[in-house]
Image (cartoon, rainbow over all chains, first blue to last red; front, side, top):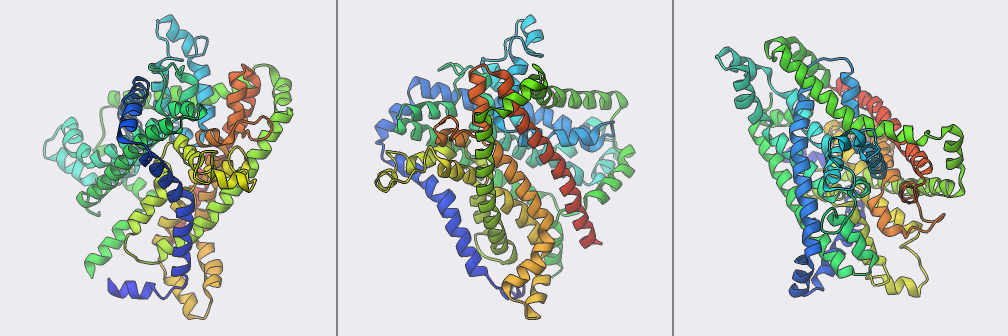
Length: 278
Length: 303
Protein backbone atom coordinates (compact mmCIF):
# COMPACT_ATOMS: atom_id res chain seq x y z
CA UNK A 1 0.00 0.00 0.00
CA UNK A 2 2.77 2.41 0.96
CA UNK A 3 4.59 1.58 -2.27
CA UNK A 4 1.55 2.75 -4.24
CA UNK A 5 1.20 5.91 -2.18
CA UNK A 6 4.83 6.84 -2.78
CA UNK A 7 4.59 6.18 -6.50
CA UNK A 8 1.43 8.26 -6.85
CA UNK A 9 3.16 11.25 -5.34
CA UNK A 10 5.44 11.36 -8.40
CA UNK A 11 2.67 13.11 -10.34
CA UNK A 12 2.88 16.90 -10.05
CA UNK A 13 0.21 19.37 -9.06
CA UNK A 14 -1.22 17.86 -5.88
CA UNK A 15 -0.65 20.95 -3.76
CA UNK A 16 -1.93 23.35 -6.38
CA UNK A 17 -5.06 21.40 -7.39
CA UNK A 18 -5.93 20.49 -3.80
CA UNK A 19 -5.49 24.09 -2.72
CA UNK A 20 -7.71 25.35 -5.54
CA UNK A 21 -10.30 22.65 -4.81
CA UNK A 22 -10.53 23.51 -1.13
CA UNK A 23 -10.60 27.28 -1.76
CA UNK A 24 -13.31 27.10 -4.40
CA UNK A 25 -15.31 24.60 -2.35
CA UNK A 26 -15.13 26.99 0.60
CA UNK A 27 -16.15 30.05 -1.40
CA UNK A 28 -19.11 28.50 -3.22
CA UNK A 29 -20.42 25.88 -0.76
CA UNK A 30 -18.95 25.93 2.73
CA UNK A 31 -18.90 29.65 3.57
CA UNK A 32 -22.48 30.24 2.33
CA UNK A 33 -23.75 27.23 4.30
CA UNK A 34 -21.76 28.28 7.38
CA UNK A 35 -23.35 31.73 7.06
CA UNK A 36 -26.76 30.12 7.40
CA UNK A 37 -25.77 28.34 10.61
CA UNK A 38 -24.12 31.51 11.97
CA UNK A 39 -27.32 33.41 11.32
CA UNK A 40 -29.32 30.83 13.24
CA UNK A 41 -26.95 31.20 16.23
CA UNK A 42 -27.98 34.86 16.42
CA UNK A 43 -31.37 33.63 17.56
CA UNK A 44 -31.89 32.84 21.22
CA UNK A 45 -33.19 29.33 21.96
CA UNK A 46 -36.53 30.88 22.97
CA UNK A 47 -36.82 32.73 19.65
CA UNK A 48 -35.87 29.59 17.73
CA UNK A 49 -38.43 27.58 19.66
CA UNK A 50 -41.13 30.21 19.13
CA UNK A 51 -40.57 30.11 15.36
CA UNK A 52 -40.38 26.36 15.07
CA UNK A 53 -43.32 25.64 17.34
CA UNK A 54 -45.65 28.08 15.61
CA UNK A 55 -48.63 26.34 14.09
CA UNK A 56 -47.86 27.36 10.52
CA UNK A 57 -44.20 26.24 10.67
CA UNK A 58 -45.09 22.92 12.28
CA UNK A 59 -47.77 22.27 9.69
CA UNK A 60 -45.43 23.15 6.82
CA UNK A 61 -42.77 20.78 8.17
CA UNK A 62 -45.39 18.09 8.72
CA UNK A 63 -46.69 18.45 5.15
CA UNK A 64 -43.16 18.35 3.67
CA UNK A 65 -41.77 15.50 5.75
CA UNK A 66 -44.97 13.45 5.92
CA UNK A 67 -45.82 13.56 2.25
CA UNK A 68 -42.17 13.15 1.24
CA UNK A 69 -41.97 9.97 3.28
CA UNK A 70 -45.25 8.64 1.86
CA UNK A 71 -44.08 9.46 -1.68
CA UNK A 72 -40.69 7.83 -1.06
CA UNK A 73 -42.50 4.66 0.08
CA UNK A 74 -44.55 4.60 -3.14
CA UNK A 75 -41.30 5.11 -5.05
CA UNK A 76 -39.72 2.22 -3.17
CA UNK A 77 -42.51 -0.17 -4.18
CA UNK A 78 -43.04 1.10 -7.74
CA UNK A 79 -39.30 1.63 -8.24
CA UNK A 80 -38.66 -2.01 -7.30
CA UNK A 81 -41.31 -3.19 -9.76
CA UNK A 82 -39.82 -0.99 -12.51
CA UNK A 83 -36.28 -2.17 -11.80
CA UNK A 84 -37.39 -5.79 -11.81
CA UNK A 85 -39.14 -5.35 -15.16
CA UNK A 86 -36.19 -3.46 -16.69
CA UNK A 87 -33.46 -5.82 -15.48
CA UNK A 88 -35.09 -9.23 -15.51
CA UNK A 89 -37.61 -9.16 -18.35
CA UNK A 90 -37.43 -8.42 -22.06
CA UNK A 91 -40.36 -6.50 -23.52
CA UNK A 92 -40.88 -4.15 -26.47
CA UNK A 93 -39.81 -0.59 -25.59
CA UNK A 94 -37.69 -1.72 -22.65
CA UNK A 95 -34.73 0.48 -23.57
CA UNK A 96 -37.05 3.44 -24.17
CA UNK A 97 -38.68 3.04 -20.77
CA UNK A 98 -35.25 2.64 -19.21
CA UNK A 99 -34.29 6.03 -20.65
CA UNK A 100 -37.64 7.56 -19.63
CA UNK A 101 -36.89 6.84 -15.97
CA UNK A 102 -34.38 9.73 -16.08
CA UNK A 103 -36.93 12.31 -17.27
CA UNK A 104 -37.71 13.59 -13.74
CA UNK A 105 -33.95 14.19 -13.29
CA UNK A 106 -33.64 16.09 -16.55
CA UNK A 107 -36.92 17.97 -16.78
CA UNK A 108 -36.68 21.41 -15.12
CA UNK A 109 -38.82 21.37 -11.99
CA UNK A 110 -40.95 24.36 -13.01
CA UNK A 111 -41.85 22.56 -16.25
CA UNK A 112 -42.76 19.42 -14.32
CA UNK A 113 -44.82 21.59 -11.98
CA UNK A 114 -46.96 23.27 -14.64
CA UNK A 115 -47.29 20.00 -16.60
CA UNK A 116 -48.47 17.98 -13.59
CA UNK A 117 -50.87 20.75 -12.59
CA UNK A 118 -52.38 20.93 -16.05
CA UNK A 119 -52.64 17.12 -16.16
CA UNK A 120 -54.32 16.77 -12.76
CA UNK A 121 -56.39 19.99 -12.76
CA UNK A 122 -60.14 19.50 -12.74
CA UNK A 123 -60.34 19.82 -16.52
CA UNK A 124 -57.05 18.03 -17.17
CA UNK A 125 -56.56 14.71 -18.96
CA UNK A 126 -56.30 12.80 -15.69
CA UNK A 127 -57.97 15.35 -13.43
CA UNK A 128 -61.32 15.16 -15.23
CA UNK A 129 -61.83 11.38 -14.88
CA UNK A 130 -60.56 11.53 -11.29
CA UNK A 131 -62.94 14.40 -10.51
CA UNK A 132 -65.79 12.27 -11.85
CA UNK A 133 -64.81 9.70 -9.21
CA UNK A 134 -64.85 12.45 -6.59
CA UNK A 135 -61.05 12.61 -6.24
CA UNK A 136 -59.50 16.05 -6.34
CA UNK A 137 -55.73 16.03 -6.90
CA UNK A 138 -54.55 19.46 -7.99
CA UNK A 139 -54.47 22.19 -5.30
CA UNK A 140 -54.75 19.62 -2.48
CA UNK A 141 -52.14 17.74 -0.42
CA UNK A 142 -52.74 14.83 -2.80
CA UNK A 143 -51.25 17.01 -5.56
CA UNK A 144 -48.09 17.52 -3.50
CA UNK A 145 -47.92 13.76 -3.05
CA UNK A 146 -48.20 13.20 -6.83
CA UNK A 147 -45.45 15.75 -7.59
CA UNK A 148 -43.16 14.17 -5.00
CA UNK A 149 -43.73 10.71 -6.50
CA UNK A 150 -42.79 12.09 -9.92
CA UNK A 151 -39.58 13.68 -8.67
CA UNK A 152 -38.46 10.61 -6.69
CA UNK A 153 -38.87 7.79 -9.23
CA UNK A 154 -35.33 7.83 -10.66
CA UNK A 155 -33.64 7.66 -7.26
CA UNK A 156 -34.89 4.19 -6.31
CA UNK A 157 -34.60 2.81 -9.86
CA UNK A 158 -31.06 4.10 -10.49
CA UNK A 159 -29.74 3.00 -7.07
CA UNK A 160 -31.18 -0.52 -7.19
CA UNK A 161 -30.67 -1.24 -10.92
CA UNK A 162 -26.86 -1.77 -10.88
CA UNK A 163 -27.07 -3.94 -7.75
CA UNK A 164 -29.77 -6.18 -9.22
CA UNK A 165 -27.75 -6.46 -12.45
CA UNK A 166 -24.66 -7.46 -10.47
CA UNK A 167 -26.45 -10.01 -8.32
CA UNK A 168 -24.78 -13.39 -8.58
CA UNK A 169 -27.25 -15.66 -10.43
CA UNK A 170 -25.78 -18.73 -8.74
CA UNK A 171 -27.21 -17.91 -5.32
CA UNK A 172 -30.71 -17.84 -6.81
CA UNK A 173 -30.11 -21.07 -8.71
CA UNK A 174 -28.77 -22.64 -5.54
CA UNK A 175 -31.81 -21.56 -3.56
CA UNK A 176 -34.09 -22.88 -6.29
CA UNK A 177 -32.33 -26.21 -6.61
CA UNK A 178 -32.36 -26.66 -2.82
CA UNK A 179 -36.15 -26.57 -2.96
CA UNK A 180 -37.00 -22.95 -2.18
CA UNK A 181 -40.06 -21.68 -3.97
CA UNK A 182 -39.58 -18.71 -6.28
CA UNK A 183 -41.31 -16.47 -3.74
CA UNK A 184 -39.08 -17.73 -0.92
CA UNK A 185 -35.99 -17.10 -3.05
CA UNK A 186 -37.09 -13.53 -3.73
CA UNK A 187 -37.94 -12.73 -0.10
CA UNK A 188 -35.13 -14.63 1.62
CA UNK A 189 -32.27 -14.42 -0.90
CA UNK A 190 -32.73 -11.51 -3.30
CA UNK A 191 -34.43 -8.97 -1.05
CA UNK A 192 -31.72 -9.04 1.65
CA UNK A 193 -29.05 -8.50 -1.02
CA UNK A 194 -30.95 -5.52 -2.38
CA UNK A 195 -31.83 -4.09 1.04
CA UNK A 196 -28.97 -1.55 1.30
CA UNK A 197 -29.66 -0.25 -2.22
CA UNK A 198 -33.41 -0.12 -1.58
CA UNK A 199 -32.91 1.84 1.64
CA UNK A 200 -30.44 4.17 -0.08
CA UNK A 201 -32.95 4.81 -2.85
CA UNK A 202 -35.68 5.43 -0.28
CA UNK A 203 -33.47 7.90 1.61
CA UNK A 204 -32.43 9.75 -1.56
CA UNK A 205 -36.02 9.99 -2.84
CA UNK A 206 -37.15 11.22 0.57
CA UNK A 207 -34.37 13.83 0.79
CA UNK A 208 -35.17 15.13 -2.68
CA UNK A 209 -38.93 15.29 -2.01
CA UNK A 210 -38.51 17.10 1.33
CA UNK A 211 -36.56 19.92 -0.29
CA UNK A 212 -38.46 19.97 -3.57
CA UNK A 213 -39.93 23.31 -4.57
CA UNK A 214 -40.48 23.87 -8.30
CA UNK A 215 -42.51 20.81 -9.19
CA UNK A 216 -44.65 21.07 -6.04
CA UNK A 217 -45.71 24.71 -5.66
CA UNK A 218 -47.84 24.83 -8.81
CA UNK A 219 -49.94 21.81 -7.96
CA UNK A 220 -49.98 22.31 -4.19
CA UNK A 221 -52.61 25.01 -3.77
CA UNK A 222 -50.32 26.50 -1.09
CA UNK A 223 -53.01 26.90 1.55
CA UNK A 224 -51.29 27.71 4.89
CA UNK A 225 -51.47 24.83 7.39
CA UNK A 226 -52.96 22.50 4.77
CA UNK A 227 -50.97 22.35 1.57
CA UNK A 228 -48.04 24.66 2.26
CA UNK A 229 -44.62 22.98 2.04
CA UNK A 230 -41.67 24.06 4.18
CA UNK A 231 -39.52 25.40 1.28
CA UNK A 232 -42.43 27.63 0.23
CA UNK A 233 -42.77 28.94 3.78
CA UNK A 234 -39.06 29.87 3.66
CA UNK A 235 -39.70 31.84 0.46
CA UNK A 236 -42.76 33.53 2.00
CA UNK A 237 -40.83 34.50 5.17
CA UNK A 238 -38.02 35.90 3.00
CA UNK A 239 -40.45 38.01 1.02
CA UNK A 240 -41.80 39.35 4.33
CA UNK A 241 -38.17 40.14 5.38
CA UNK A 242 -38.62 37.76 8.34
CA UNK A 243 -35.08 36.39 7.81
CA UNK A 244 -34.92 34.79 11.28
CA UNK A 245 -37.99 32.66 10.52
CA UNK A 246 -36.64 31.64 7.11
CA UNK A 247 -33.26 30.76 8.64
CA UNK A 248 -34.74 28.68 11.45
CA UNK A 249 -36.84 26.56 9.07
CA UNK A 250 -33.88 26.18 6.71
CA UNK A 251 -31.59 25.00 9.50
CA UNK A 252 -34.06 22.30 10.55
CA UNK A 253 -34.28 21.08 6.95
CA UNK A 254 -30.50 21.19 6.50
CA UNK A 255 -29.87 19.19 9.65
CA UNK A 256 -32.30 16.54 8.39
CA UNK A 257 -30.47 16.49 5.02
CA UNK A 258 -27.14 15.99 6.78
CA UNK A 259 -28.56 13.13 8.84
CA UNK A 260 -29.78 11.53 5.61
CA UNK A 261 -26.37 11.95 3.92
CA UNK A 262 -24.74 10.33 6.95
CA UNK A 263 -27.25 7.47 6.88
CA UNK A 264 -26.72 6.94 3.15
CA UNK A 265 -22.93 6.87 3.62
CA UNK A 266 -23.31 4.24 6.33
CA UNK A 267 -25.68 2.25 4.12
CA UNK A 268 -23.14 2.30 1.29
CA UNK A 269 -20.40 1.06 3.59
CA UNK A 270 -22.71 -1.66 4.90
CA UNK A 271 -23.48 -2.69 1.31
CA UNK A 272 -19.81 -2.83 0.36
CA UNK A 273 -18.93 -4.92 3.38
CA UNK A 274 -21.67 -7.49 3.03
CA UNK A 275 -21.66 -8.13 -0.70
CA UNK A 276 -18.31 -9.70 -1.54
CA UNK A 277 -16.71 -9.19 -4.93
CA UNK A 278 -17.71 -11.73 -7.53
CA UNK B 1 -0.77 -8.56 -2.07
CA UNK B 2 -3.52 -10.77 -3.52
CA UNK B 3 -6.03 -9.14 -1.20
CA UNK B 4 -5.00 -5.78 -2.52
CA UNK B 5 -5.60 -6.80 -6.12
CA UNK B 6 -9.00 -8.21 -5.23
CA UNK B 7 -9.89 -4.90 -3.62
CA UNK B 8 -8.93 -2.93 -6.69
CA UNK B 9 -10.92 -5.22 -8.96
CA UNK B 10 -14.05 -4.94 -6.84
CA UNK B 11 -13.85 -1.16 -6.96
CA UNK B 12 -14.05 -0.91 -10.74
CA UNK B 13 -17.62 -1.27 -12.02
CA UNK B 14 -18.07 -4.61 -13.76
CA UNK B 15 -18.57 -4.77 -17.49
CA UNK B 16 -22.19 -3.96 -18.33
CA UNK B 17 -22.43 -5.93 -21.56
CA UNK B 18 -20.80 -9.10 -20.29
CA UNK B 19 -23.13 -8.97 -17.33
CA UNK B 20 -26.17 -8.64 -19.57
CA UNK B 21 -25.12 -11.65 -21.67
CA UNK B 22 -24.47 -13.84 -18.67
CA UNK B 23 -27.78 -12.82 -17.15
CA UNK B 24 -29.67 -13.59 -20.36
CA UNK B 25 -28.18 -17.07 -20.61
CA UNK B 26 -29.30 -17.96 -17.12
CA UNK B 27 -32.55 -16.08 -17.13
CA UNK B 28 -34.75 -19.08 -17.85
CA UNK B 29 -33.44 -20.78 -14.69
CA UNK B 30 -34.60 -17.98 -12.44
CA UNK B 31 -37.75 -16.31 -13.57
CA UNK B 32 -41.36 -16.01 -12.57
CA UNK B 33 -44.55 -17.49 -14.06
CA UNK B 34 -45.71 -15.77 -17.22
CA UNK B 35 -48.77 -14.19 -15.54
CA UNK B 36 -46.56 -12.56 -12.89
CA UNK B 37 -44.18 -11.27 -15.54
CA UNK B 38 -47.03 -9.70 -17.51
CA UNK B 39 -48.47 -8.03 -14.39
CA UNK B 40 -45.08 -6.57 -13.38
CA UNK B 41 -44.26 -5.31 -16.88
CA UNK B 42 -47.75 -3.78 -17.19
CA UNK B 43 -47.46 -2.05 -13.82
CA UNK B 44 -44.03 -0.64 -14.70
CA UNK B 45 -45.16 0.64 -18.11
CA UNK B 46 -48.41 2.05 -16.74
CA UNK B 47 -46.71 3.87 -13.88
CA UNK B 48 -43.99 5.37 -16.08
CA UNK B 49 -46.55 6.37 -18.71
CA UNK B 50 -48.86 8.13 -16.27
CA UNK B 51 -46.24 9.80 -14.10
CA UNK B 52 -43.50 10.55 -16.62
CA UNK B 53 -44.64 10.32 -20.25
CA UNK B 54 -48.00 12.08 -19.87
CA UNK B 55 -46.60 15.23 -18.18
CA UNK B 56 -44.07 15.47 -21.00
CA UNK B 57 -46.79 15.14 -23.66
CA UNK B 58 -48.99 17.70 -21.89
CA UNK B 59 -46.26 20.33 -22.18
CA UNK B 60 -46.19 20.11 -25.98
CA UNK B 61 -49.97 19.68 -26.31
CA UNK B 62 -50.59 22.86 -24.31
CA UNK B 63 -47.83 24.79 -26.09
CA UNK B 64 -49.38 24.06 -29.50
CA UNK B 65 -53.02 24.21 -28.33
CA UNK B 66 -53.63 27.52 -30.17
CA UNK B 67 -51.59 26.55 -33.22
CA UNK B 68 -48.03 27.04 -34.30
CA UNK B 69 -48.45 30.77 -35.00
CA UNK B 70 -49.43 31.52 -31.41
CA UNK B 71 -46.58 29.28 -30.26
CA UNK B 72 -43.97 31.13 -32.31
CA UNK B 73 -45.44 34.51 -31.37
CA UNK B 74 -45.10 33.64 -27.68
CA UNK B 75 -41.45 32.76 -28.17
CA UNK B 76 -40.77 35.98 -30.09
CA UNK B 77 -41.99 38.19 -27.22
CA UNK B 78 -39.19 40.49 -25.96
CA UNK B 79 -39.66 39.09 -22.45
CA UNK B 80 -39.21 35.55 -23.73
CA UNK B 81 -36.11 36.49 -25.71
CA UNK B 82 -34.54 38.25 -22.74
CA UNK B 83 -35.25 35.22 -20.52
CA UNK B 84 -33.65 32.91 -23.09
CA UNK B 85 -30.61 35.20 -23.30
CA UNK B 86 -30.23 35.37 -19.50
CA UNK B 87 -30.58 31.60 -19.17
CA UNK B 88 -27.83 31.06 -21.74
CA UNK B 89 -25.50 33.58 -20.08
CA UNK B 90 -26.02 32.15 -16.59
CA UNK B 91 -25.58 28.57 -17.82
CA UNK B 92 -22.35 29.53 -19.64
CA UNK B 93 -20.92 31.13 -16.50
CA UNK B 94 -21.79 28.34 -14.09
CA UNK B 95 -20.94 25.48 -16.46
CA UNK B 96 -17.60 27.17 -17.22
CA UNK B 97 -16.75 27.61 -13.55
CA UNK B 98 -17.82 24.10 -12.63
CA UNK B 99 -15.92 22.62 -15.57
CA UNK B 100 -12.66 24.18 -14.37
CA UNK B 101 -13.39 23.19 -10.79
CA UNK B 102 -14.34 19.66 -11.85
CA UNK B 103 -11.08 19.14 -13.76
CA UNK B 104 -8.94 20.56 -10.94
CA UNK B 105 -10.77 18.69 -8.16
CA UNK B 106 -10.82 15.35 -9.94
CA UNK B 107 -7.06 15.59 -10.60
CA UNK B 108 -6.40 16.14 -6.89
CA UNK B 109 -8.90 13.51 -5.74
CA UNK B 110 -8.45 10.76 -8.32
CA UNK B 111 -4.70 10.85 -8.94
CA UNK B 112 -3.48 11.07 -5.33
CA UNK B 113 -4.06 9.21 -2.09
CA UNK B 114 -4.79 11.26 1.02
CA UNK B 115 -6.75 11.06 4.23
CA UNK B 116 -10.30 12.38 4.29
CA UNK B 117 -10.92 11.75 0.57
CA UNK B 118 -14.39 10.31 1.18
CA UNK B 119 -15.26 13.28 3.36
CA UNK B 120 -14.09 15.72 0.68
CA UNK B 121 -16.28 13.97 -1.91
CA UNK B 122 -19.22 14.17 0.52
CA UNK B 123 -18.65 17.93 0.81
CA UNK B 124 -18.58 18.30 -2.98
CA UNK B 125 -21.86 16.34 -3.11
CA UNK B 126 -23.56 18.59 -0.54
CA UNK B 127 -25.55 20.73 -3.03
CA UNK B 128 -27.33 17.56 -4.23
CA UNK B 129 -28.98 17.20 -0.84
CA UNK B 130 -29.67 20.85 -0.02
CA UNK B 131 -33.12 22.14 -0.92
CA UNK B 132 -32.90 24.57 -3.88
CA UNK B 133 -34.69 27.20 -1.83
CA UNK B 134 -32.02 26.96 0.88
CA UNK B 135 -29.31 27.21 -1.79
CA UNK B 136 -30.81 30.57 -2.72
CA UNK B 137 -31.40 31.60 0.89
CA UNK B 138 -27.72 31.27 1.85
CA UNK B 139 -26.81 33.91 -0.74
CA UNK B 140 -29.57 36.23 0.47
CA UNK B 141 -28.13 35.93 3.99
CA UNK B 142 -24.64 36.76 2.65
CA UNK B 143 -25.41 39.51 0.15
CA UNK B 144 -28.89 40.77 1.04
CA UNK B 145 -29.53 44.23 2.52
CA UNK B 146 -29.40 42.75 6.05
CA UNK B 147 -26.78 40.14 5.08
CA UNK B 148 -23.17 39.81 6.22
CA UNK B 149 -21.76 41.65 3.20
CA UNK B 150 -24.89 43.67 2.44
CA UNK B 151 -23.65 46.96 3.89
CA UNK B 152 -20.23 46.75 2.25
CA UNK B 153 -21.78 45.93 -1.13
CA UNK B 154 -24.17 48.88 -0.86
CA UNK B 155 -21.34 51.26 0.07
CA UNK B 156 -19.37 50.13 -2.96
CA UNK B 157 -22.42 50.13 -5.19
CA UNK B 158 -22.07 46.47 -6.16
CA UNK B 159 -25.24 44.61 -7.01
CA UNK B 160 -25.13 40.84 -6.49
CA UNK B 161 -28.63 39.94 -5.35
CA UNK B 162 -31.51 40.53 -7.79
CA UNK B 163 -28.93 40.72 -10.59
CA UNK B 164 -26.96 38.39 -12.86
CA UNK B 165 -24.08 37.71 -10.37
CA UNK B 166 -26.51 36.38 -7.74
CA UNK B 167 -28.33 34.18 -10.24
CA UNK B 168 -25.00 32.85 -11.54
CA UNK B 169 -23.75 32.19 -7.98
CA UNK B 170 -26.88 30.31 -6.93
CA UNK B 171 -26.77 28.28 -10.17
CA UNK B 172 -23.08 27.50 -9.64
CA UNK B 173 -23.87 26.30 -6.12
CA UNK B 174 -26.67 24.03 -7.35
CA UNK B 175 -24.64 22.54 -10.23
CA UNK B 176 -21.36 22.35 -8.28
CA UNK B 177 -20.99 18.53 -8.10
CA UNK B 178 -21.91 17.52 -11.66
CA UNK B 179 -18.57 17.67 -13.54
CA UNK B 180 -16.45 16.55 -10.59
CA UNK B 181 -18.75 13.58 -9.90
CA UNK B 182 -18.62 12.51 -13.54
CA UNK B 183 -14.81 12.65 -13.63
CA UNK B 184 -13.63 11.33 -10.24
CA UNK B 185 -14.71 7.67 -10.68
CA UNK B 186 -13.54 7.67 -14.31
CA UNK B 187 -10.09 9.03 -13.46
CA UNK B 188 -9.74 6.76 -10.44
CA UNK B 189 -10.44 3.78 -12.65
CA UNK B 190 -7.86 4.89 -15.22
CA UNK B 191 -5.14 5.05 -12.61
CA UNK B 192 -1.91 7.00 -12.92
CA UNK B 193 0.35 4.81 -15.06
CA UNK B 194 -0.02 6.72 -18.31
CA UNK B 195 0.58 10.04 -16.57
CA UNK B 196 3.59 8.66 -14.73
CA UNK B 197 5.04 7.41 -18.00
CA UNK B 198 4.57 10.84 -19.59
CA UNK B 199 6.22 12.59 -16.63
CA UNK B 200 9.15 10.21 -16.55
CA UNK B 201 9.65 10.82 -20.29
CA UNK B 202 10.03 14.51 -19.51
CA UNK B 203 6.56 15.98 -20.10
CA UNK B 204 5.51 18.85 -17.86
CA UNK B 205 2.48 18.56 -15.61
CA UNK B 206 0.27 20.64 -17.90
CA UNK B 207 1.47 18.80 -21.03
CA UNK B 208 0.67 15.52 -19.31
CA UNK B 209 -2.78 16.74 -18.39
CA UNK B 210 -3.69 18.10 -21.82
CA UNK B 211 -2.04 15.39 -23.93
CA UNK B 212 -2.58 12.27 -21.80
CA UNK B 213 -5.33 12.76 -19.23
CA UNK B 214 -7.76 14.94 -21.14
CA UNK B 215 -8.04 12.66 -24.22
CA UNK B 216 -8.77 9.75 -21.86
CA UNK B 217 -11.55 11.55 -20.02
CA UNK B 218 -13.08 13.55 -22.88
CA UNK B 219 -16.38 11.62 -22.88
CA UNK B 220 -16.61 11.94 -19.13
CA UNK B 221 -16.03 15.70 -19.39
CA UNK B 222 -18.80 16.00 -21.99
CA UNK B 223 -21.08 13.88 -19.83
CA UNK B 224 -20.52 16.09 -16.80
CA UNK B 225 -20.93 19.30 -18.81
CA UNK B 226 -24.14 17.98 -20.35
CA UNK B 227 -25.80 17.21 -17.01
CA UNK B 228 -24.44 20.38 -15.43
CA UNK B 229 -25.84 22.47 -18.27
CA UNK B 230 -29.28 20.83 -18.13
CA UNK B 231 -29.55 21.56 -14.43
CA UNK B 232 -28.15 25.09 -14.80
CA UNK B 233 -30.67 26.04 -17.48
CA UNK B 234 -33.58 24.44 -15.64
CA UNK B 235 -32.86 25.53 -12.06
CA UNK B 236 -35.89 27.15 -10.50
CA UNK B 237 -35.98 27.22 -6.68
CA UNK B 238 -32.55 28.70 -5.96
CA UNK B 239 -32.75 31.21 -8.80
CA UNK B 240 -36.27 32.19 -7.79
CA UNK B 241 -35.03 33.25 -4.33
CA UNK B 242 -32.14 35.41 -5.57
CA UNK B 243 -33.54 36.79 -8.82
CA UNK B 244 -35.99 39.43 -7.60
CA UNK B 245 -38.20 38.69 -10.61
CA UNK B 246 -37.49 41.95 -12.44
CA UNK B 247 -39.36 41.59 -15.72
CA UNK B 248 -37.19 41.56 -18.81
CA UNK B 249 -34.06 41.70 -16.64
CA UNK B 250 -33.64 38.96 -14.05
CA UNK B 251 -36.12 36.33 -15.20
CA UNK B 252 -34.62 33.11 -16.48
CA UNK B 253 -36.73 30.76 -18.60
CA UNK B 254 -38.04 28.67 -15.67
CA UNK B 255 -38.98 31.87 -13.79
CA UNK B 256 -40.79 33.22 -16.83
CA UNK B 257 -42.75 29.95 -17.06
CA UNK B 258 -43.96 30.58 -13.51
CA UNK B 259 -44.90 34.21 -14.15
CA UNK B 260 -46.77 33.52 -17.39
CA UNK B 261 -48.53 30.53 -15.84
CA UNK B 262 -49.70 32.56 -12.85
CA UNK B 263 -51.02 35.18 -15.28
CA UNK B 264 -53.04 32.47 -17.05
CA UNK B 265 -51.02 32.98 -20.26
CA UNK B 266 -50.94 29.21 -20.70
CA UNK B 267 -49.82 29.07 -24.34
CA UNK B 268 -46.89 31.39 -23.63
CA UNK B 269 -45.98 29.57 -20.39
CA UNK B 270 -46.02 26.17 -22.08
CA UNK B 271 -44.18 27.51 -25.13
CA UNK B 272 -41.22 28.45 -22.93
CA UNK B 273 -41.70 25.21 -21.00
CA UNK B 274 -41.58 23.26 -24.26
CA UNK B 275 -38.12 24.67 -25.02
CA UNK B 276 -36.94 23.50 -21.60
CA UNK B 277 -38.59 20.10 -22.10
CA UNK B 278 -36.85 19.84 -25.47
CA UNK B 279 -33.55 20.63 -23.76
CA UNK B 280 -34.26 17.82 -21.28
CA UNK B 281 -35.05 15.34 -24.06
CA UNK B 282 -31.94 16.28 -26.07
CA UNK B 283 -29.89 15.98 -22.88
CA UNK B 284 -31.25 12.48 -22.24
CA UNK B 285 -30.54 11.34 -25.80
CA UNK B 286 -27.01 12.79 -25.70
CA UNK B 287 -26.51 11.18 -22.29
CA UNK B 288 -27.46 7.76 -23.67
CA UNK B 289 -25.01 8.22 -26.57
CA UNK B 290 -22.23 9.34 -24.22
CA UNK B 291 -22.88 6.43 -21.87
CA UNK B 292 -22.32 4.00 -24.72
CA UNK B 293 -19.01 5.77 -25.48
CA UNK B 294 -18.03 5.53 -21.82
CA UNK B 295 -18.94 1.82 -21.81
CA UNK B 296 -16.77 1.26 -24.88
CA UNK B 297 -13.95 2.88 -22.94
CA UNK B 298 -14.43 0.27 -20.24
CA UNK B 299 -14.38 -2.54 -22.81
CA UNK B 300 -11.21 -1.28 -24.44
CA UNK B 301 -9.40 -1.20 -21.12
CA UNK B 302 -10.83 -4.40 -19.69
CA UNK B 303 -9.95 -6.72 -22.55
